[in-house]
Image (cartoon, rainbow, N blue to C red):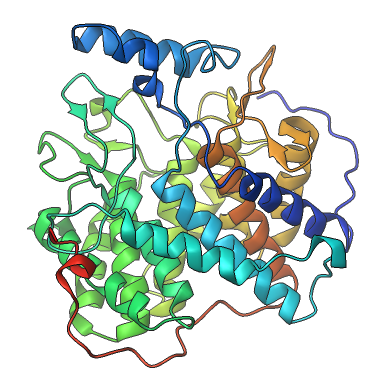
Length: 427
């Protein structure tokens, strides 16, 4: 596979914190609102069409998504705050505040920002804008998405769009213990609404509510299991641990001999193969189980990290698309690689990925680009896909690099019954 030649990048004591501060500022100045990966149905021009046709929707959505330049302004695509993105920004703000408090980074006086207040505002927004009518806390994209099977409506919840907000609520729990109690109800969403069920070798859950049973999305299962582990770490309920273990047992069984995972089971149910960041989701989720519970999956993680390093990244730190294709090199893959290798204790390689990303997908002033193709770079900046993921990855890299322990829920958990609006039920 081709390797880009990269020059030295200054990731000294001042450069990485400055990068984190500038990336947070870029998002904050825009109220954490922007374009997203598959937001073409938010086009005002499309909505003016008098008919709602699946094939027209797909044509517009995919044309906007795949265009080599950003055509969203031409299509009058509305900018929104993404649910998952808000969670990532909340956690990055909290981590930056902890770095400042610990003296691990410096912030110029003229740039002083209430990062804790920013995080609290974002977490409150997550609670206010969660999806309602389900068994517990959950969320989804705020725009429509057209697939071949169905048209996904705004706020239609998924385990992926819920897992990261749960982490954000738990991270913010020292500010207000009720955040943890709201997050706890997400376990009911996973078990009841996502159809947690036993299979040979473990258990599975659906990706979305009322999903198809024709295939299983492996990384979504891993993220759901990690959600349960995050809750177990706070609430110490054995049922959370055991349900997570059963899901992970099945995920481990689906690991290939090469060490990676296909996007779906069966593999031919998706055009994606063993792509980069979805494998990263699985590995990071298993890493979290090892940190919180035990070393049950240590060999699985070791094989997964080696596959990830040797087949999904170049020596330069450039992310490959999957096990057989180098391009496109996606910013989301860079961010997920930084996270996985940071948590694996391989900070030198995490730093190398960040260096490659700054050389190839950074536009300056805290702004990152979407993808590097073989002959061109897609210089679109997406608020969740580019900005939120990179700021979260940089914050976690700096936290580990500076020796700051992970956030824990130290405040007492409130025991008062939750209001219906906190549980995700209709008001």
